[in-house]
Image (cartoon, rainbow, N blue to C red):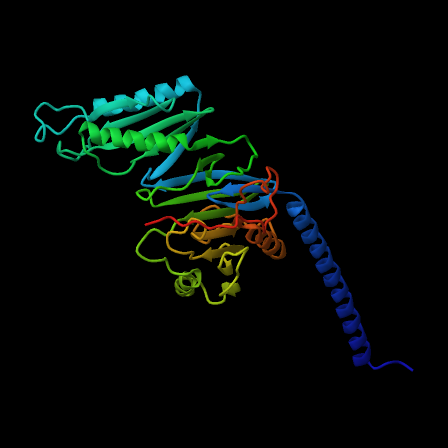
Length: 385
């Protein structure tokens, strides 16, 4: 007996749907396997980076792209150049010559004296120089600015705009030089891949041993990491001591403001909150977390993941921290780069990085390889106001 046409049609449709389901299921399974393989490859070996007084683990294929570091009161920024000693001397002399060549406005100083007040070479700390100069737009009053240089093991450290204004008298200059000598004496360049085992502030392969003095008040560091073969991935870690009048707003408060702006600017439905966690504590650090997926006008997805801790006032071991990971080009970037990692891999790599953030162990338990994430020094000294 022949089946009715509609029954035959139903069987054909059912068979086609089953075939499509099998194809989709196989494709999903293949995508899952590729995602698992990529995640395993990225996280199979990790490298610990000392940043400030903390450690963070990143995939071995990570590269530190740029650093910005400062000790408040000791320099707005610390710049590092890889140069030999003779080249360092030439750089310092060339900088001094720049200030010699600049002159006061004739209305302020008819003699048009050079802005360089003097160049001092330290007698106590080798290869250390301090430039004292007048500000270009200042009258020749009883105050000075300075820049400081220190060379050590192939690195030239430059402290820009160090500490504000100082008396031009000999006691004022001598005090500045003395403080800088103490600061440079605490610097120690580390061998590549080494994690220091003594207390101090780490940046760009260097440790500034000890703690800030009361007049320095705090520390700050920013480092940007890239991921080899994944040019669309960037990881940024910012840390600074809370030495202002009050704490900065918590991460979720900033997130709510960001979401309000995005909903005004982006098409409806293009912004997805993957995570909004009011509490995600990590190795004793109180924190909050957000994760966004944004569909860009170019048609690709952009991921922004953030973990932040407000910290406590004047506590070197509970500072303000913001860790971010961006994947894919942002909506306002001209160069279009779709994400090179799928969403599952992004979240797993992110969780691994966040969970690794911890205080750098010091003392006999610390090692120069990969320090266990949950080890931390017992005490948490605070900077005295």
